[in-house]
Length: 384
Image (spheres, one colour):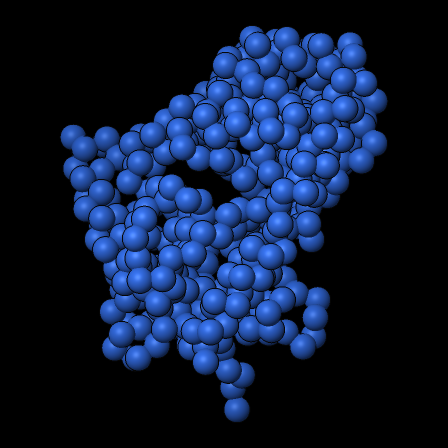
């Protein structure tokens, strides 16, 4: 007799290395729920469990090439394919394009239907270059589909959102589940390396500060930089040109310790955070785009939790968080950020104080265990 599945997680867009997918999955497993995950990516990057009493199944692909493509057609294809293979009592969809077909299948089979929304996707479309292609037709289609997805999401048995400002703001059953740190996925910075080092973990694209961080690297020759995350296709030529211009060879070989600027590619969360060991500073130089202006990047919480000082761009909620925690500095451009790095290099005692203040603030104010337990309890109710 086949093992019962409580929750089927459908992710046609975010791949198996996605940090939020890992955090949500771990919370559900801790609650004793059995999980199957449908998502693109490499099995080595998938969430794992070491508890033999827990069941976590990563569904294998039918066509490996289709499993890895990131274009919209591939995402739409996976969204339909995954939904019809799901066996869980609750179907939990975390990709917008999969919401409508999941709603239809769940209602037809009398299953419970849950949705997770990472970001304000309507605002995020304004940040994507592909949305303007072909006279903006692709963007208009994506916008229409997103509005449809939000309509169905409001009617889910449970809607989880990553922050207070993420729409829809009204729904049948809406729960804010912030991207708070999961300590089981993180590596603390510990003792600082002798050579000062700054890190960034997340998607690498212009709007997320890629160009600014590389300019900062130019201005800070005494520092090393580790970038963990996939480089957006639209920015790859810029990165290649920057590396060539600056004479940095083998930067995409993360094992090459001689390179001052290193790109590690997209890694599973536990592997990503290993670069934090010995690092001094975490970077978050996001641009003031419609999608980011009201957001708090999850990496700010994580930088504080692992003991890194933070340099952030002047987004309103980031300013508020840095001021409250006294864990870093706000820099409106790479030149100002470089001045902070130079100051901290010359006065490491100051950066040690910022690191300690960040850890202390996170311990008092970030109740990750309670927030994830509340989420898991609400999901468990749907399985009964």
